[in-house]
Image (cartoon, rainbow, N blue to C red):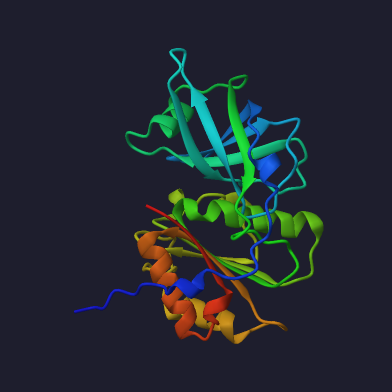
Length: 251
C-alpha cells in the first residue's frame, strides 16, 4: 500500500507579507475589457479597475457577481497579471462543469460587463521578487505563478526563477505561447513527439535543487490537493527545506 503524504503544518511559512485590510476589504467596480482564449477550457479575462491599489505576484482577489434579483455569488481567483499593469487585472478561469461563476464568464460575459472585486488578498503566497523562486504548478495552478514570471520579465530581475508546469497535454498548457527558457513543461497524458509522458517525478525536481542558487530557493507550489502533496514530497526528498515551501491548493 502506498502511504499518503500529508504536508506538516510547518509548511505554513512564517513571514507572510502584510495585507492592507482597509484596502483589501473595499469592493470596487471592475469592467471587463477583453477576453483571450488560452486553451479549449480556459480563458483570460482582462478588467479595468481604475482604483486598484496594486498587488504582489501570487496574491488573489475576491470577485462578486450580482444578479438582477439580488442573488450574489462570490469566488476567490488568483491574479494572473503582473503588478506593473497599473489600473488593470487579469484572471484566467477554467470553465468548470456546473460552475455558476466560471460558467457565466465562459458563456455569457462580454466586454463592457461589470463585476465587483476586492483585494488584493493573502500575503502568504506572494513573491516580492527579492529571492530566487522555484515555481511548480499544475493545470490552472499555474495562474499565480505566471504573475511571478511576468513580473520577473517586466522588471528584468536578476534573481533566478524556474517554473515546472504540469498539464495533460500541449493543448491544455495554459500560457504556452509565453513560456521561455525558465519553464519546463511536464505532460501527463499526451506530448509532442520525443517528449516523455508521465507525472512530475524526482527527475524533474532534483536537477533544479542541485543548481541551488546563493541563499537557496523559495518554492511555490500551486495545484490540486493531490498535486500539491506530491510536488511537496518531491521537493523535500530532493533537499528543499520544509520551511521554504509555500503551498496554495484547490479542490
